[in-house]
Length: 100
Image (cartoon, rainbow, N blue to C red; front, side):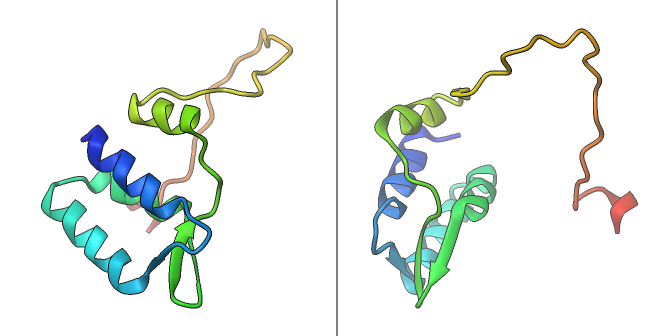
C-alpha cells in the first residue's frame, strides 16, 4: 500500500468541511488507477457524507495517521484481563459466497 497516497487521502478527508462529491469521485478514480483497492475499502468504511461533502467520520490525530501509514494498529484500550479461553470467531463477510 502506498503510504504517501494513504496519508494524502486521510489528510484531505480529515477536515470539518470535507471534500466535494466531485473530489471524492476523482479521489476514488485516482486510487483505482493506482490499484489501491484496499485503501478505497478502508476509506469507504470511514467516510460519511452530508450535503454533498465527504469527510472522515472519526477525527485523526498525527499518531493515528502515522500508525495507519505504517500499517500498525494502535490499541488504546487493550483487554485488561487475559483470557485463558481464547476462541476464534467467524466473522460474517459480504464477499463470502456462502452469504449471498
